[in-house]
Image (cartoon, rainbow, N blue to C red):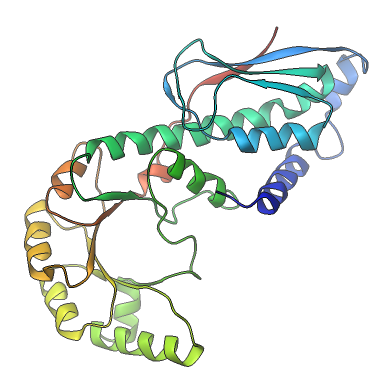
Length: 281
């Protein structure tokens, strides 16, 4: 779960970005003493995500707002469901409206998409991972949505795992050189980080196995047949991961190859927000 202080900072910056010096439309049109209730309505079926962040938007906008919640993160919602009711000053509700919707719609879209991938690989050993293909400044929210949808987070950033990709290998000169330099660097810095390396073909897998010194091998843009062959070559020596162009229609074929993980950039990079609206009641 995203740390409370980090969530507070993310929401604070989002409010500053949206509200600036003030919601002049509401200030101009709405009586400052007018109060009432609005309902968040689901307009399509999906997995709800973002409630904790939405509540923080309301808290920072106006702590006097009253919220009655009917659903929580991870619940399945259907068209017509009332997710929550918010009561208080009209100006405060309007000031929080768009930011609340943006968060809930996008996070719920991510959670819904993730849940479909997780369901598609049920009965296999594969776990669904996200990637770093996230919206700048919103990574923590989007990765929380993946977890709510039943997926797992890959590395959070460049700092919490070593991931040797094709360009690293090419710049280092070879797979062996990249791994050797990585191990020396981690030892010099006193760091205990997992090391993952990308394989572009079966020959790369063989070279990685000869070299050793890693924790996980990623099979990048492999066919299902080559993935099965690669998994057999690794034979449990290292964790295995499939990545690259994997869709909802093809994900199970890769899971059945026996990989430990399948990373899907589309979970956060190519999603449709879940349709919702906030309406006066």
